[in-house]
Image (tube, rainbow, N blue to C red; front, side, top):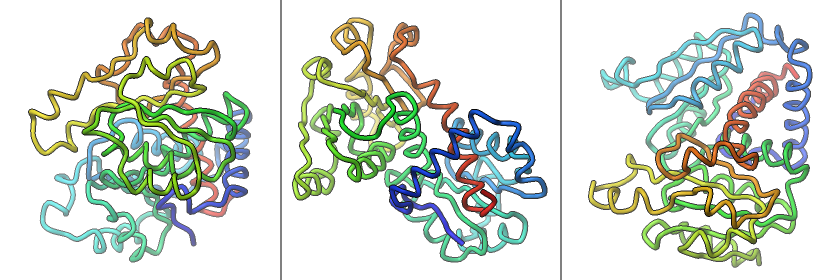
Length: 303
């Protein structure tokens, strides 16, 4: 039995196989429509979510399975003080596989250590978000045709952004990747990440202005400034509109540059950019369903 706590839990070869399976699901949905008949997915979301929770539920329903769980910790026995380890022991009696989102780093790992069913980390605090990273990698691979040989700019909240941290760590295993980190000083990528990049000899830059680097990017990964990660309202208000991607900035970019975003979007991408064919963040959402379908099949050892 395997769990997914980090994108690094799968080798590069295993990821290629997973992406190939996701592509086949995209091309031949009817072939997979009954693969999980009689199986149940439990979605345990201790933290608000729209895309991730509904994407998991859609993935399981597309496979012919069923879904149980909760979308709010207050509606579960957590409100009575039940521990994560006890919750997963109970859920293991009901479901065949589980997706868990939790505000505390490491909570899904605790669940996995007490579970008799596969557990998928659907986001733990500011730490990891592996299925978003798999979604990002599948999007890049599908639209660019490769996962190597490009310059990627990551913009916004690089300090608390779990999607950013997961994606950087995943891309380290591919060749000829160059990073440009675009953020205010207060939201710079953590030192442990830049220390590791230096140790591995992987080139990176840290800049404050998005305009400085737009012309050199093959991919731009935008993120929102996350209100829920701030300790005080003043810092959030001061930084929340630090970056706004608009048509004027897009005019500085390459004709084939792609804009990704894990969503939800607040103000950091102008709605006018949605009409630009280089804006692929809504395509990302669809790829998220395909990769989660593939992941469920793989962890249940059905495909």
